[in-house]
Length: 271
Length: 302
Image (tube, rainbow over all chains, first blue to last red; front, side, top):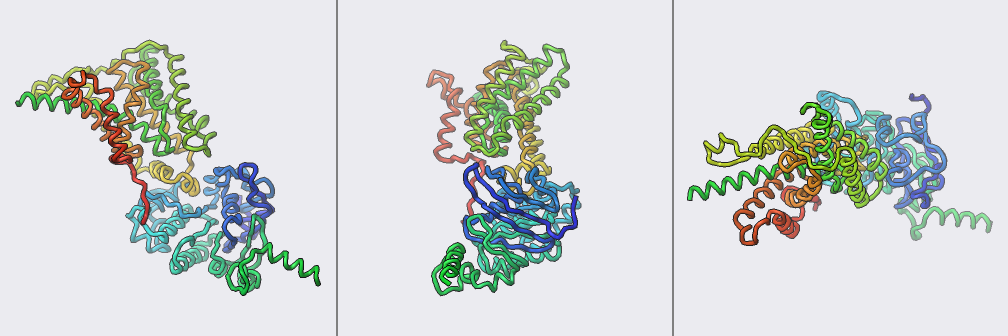
C-alpha cells in the first residue's frame, strides 16, 4: 500500500537503545520528501548511522532497538519489518565502509543487488546495462575481483548494487569517507543523477558538510543523538553557526552546538 | 622392479580413492564454514544420524533403496530446518565461538536421537557394491582396486561438480557466496540469511548422508562414524576451510599420504601410523601455510 503524502520517510521523535542500556538517539525527528535529497550531518558518534539503521531495520542485528517514537515509510510503520522486507518495499541502505563482497567480481556484486527481485537472465542483463550508464568506470572493471578495486570504485559498487534492487529510497551512510576530493565529487554527481533520473529519494549521512549540503535539498544537523538544527540546504550553508562549527569558517577554536546554545542563553540572561 | 612400481601404484590409487571418502566428509564442513564461519562439530553426528536413519528405513521398514535415500535426504533437510530455526536464528547476533559451542551440543542431540530411534547395534549396510578388487582392472592393469573405492570416487566427483555448478551459476549460490563474504552487507541488499542457512545445512546434511553410506558400507554403520569426522580436520587444514576444491584435494592428499606412509614407513614404527600421520602433516601445514592450499586468503588492498 503506498500513499500520496509528500513524505516518503517520516521519523517522529525516536529514541534508540543498544543492549537495553546505551542510549544512542534521544530524540530524532526528520522527514524526507518524495524525490528529494536530505542530508543528515554530524560528527562521529552523533547518531547518523544509528538513525539510518533504525530506518532500514538493521538495528536488530546489532542489538539495537527503537524504544520510543515512530518511523513511517511510504505511509506505513516499519516496526514489524526486517531488512529483506524493507528491501522488498524499495528501501535500501548502503552501509558505511562500502562493504563489497571482496571475493566476488564487480559484476557479481552488482547482480547480487537484484537478489530480492524475481528477474530473468535477460532482465538482469538489461538492468545491468542501465546501471552501467551511471557507473561507466565499473563496466570496464566488471570482471575484476571487488577486493582489488579502489576505494572509489568500491563505493560505486556498493551504490550500484543497491540500485539493482530498484529502490524508491536510498540510505547512504558516509559514501565519501576516505575518498579523494575528485572522487567525492564524482560520487555526488552520480547520486544527484540517480536522484533526478531515477526519482530515488535519498537520505544521506555525511561528515563532509559542505559538499553534502551543496548536493541536498534539505539538511538536519544532529549531535549526541539529538537534532540540533534543520533547514533547507541553502539556509544551512548560509547559517553563521553552521559555518563556524561545520564548515570550518571561524576565527575562534572549534566548538559544538551545545556550547553555542549555552553561550546564547548566557547572553540572553546578561541582556 | 616392475612389480614394485605396480605395488606402489596400487597403494597410491587405493589411497587416492579412499581419500575421496575423506573429501566427502570434509565437504560438509566446508559448506557450513562458508556460510557461518563456524567449524560444525556436529558434522560427524550428522553423518551417523543420516546413515543410521537410511539403514533404519531400509532394514526396519523394508523401504526400497531409492525411496529410503530420498526419505533420509528429506529427513536431513528437516534437521537443517530445525537447526536454522532452533539453534542458529536465536544465536544470530552471538559470536562465532558461541555458535561453535552450539554445534557441539547439536552433535550430542543428534547422536542421542539417532540411537534412541534406531538402536545402538552395529548395522551392516549393503549397497550392492563389494569392497573387493574389480576383476577387470585386476586382469588388465594388474592393479587391485576396490569397487567401493571407485564408486566413492565417482560419487564424490559428481557431488563436487554439482555443488560447483550450484555456487557458480545459480542465484542462491551467488547469495551464499555473498553471505560468506559479508553477511551484514548481504542482508542490507535483501538476501534473506535464513534461506541461505537452510540451504547450506540441508546440503551439508545430504552430503553427510552420502559420506555415511560410503563409510557405512565399508566399516558398518556404527557410532564410530562420529569420530570419522575428526579425520576431516587435517583434510580441511591442508585444503583450506572455505574451499570446496580444497576439501577434495586435501582428502586425496591425506588418503594417498597415509596409505603410502603406512606401507613404506609404517613398519619402522610398528605399523598403524595411518591413524596419526595425517595430523602430523596437518601440523606442518599449520606452521607453514595456515590458510591451507586453497583457502581464501584474507584479501587486503595495499
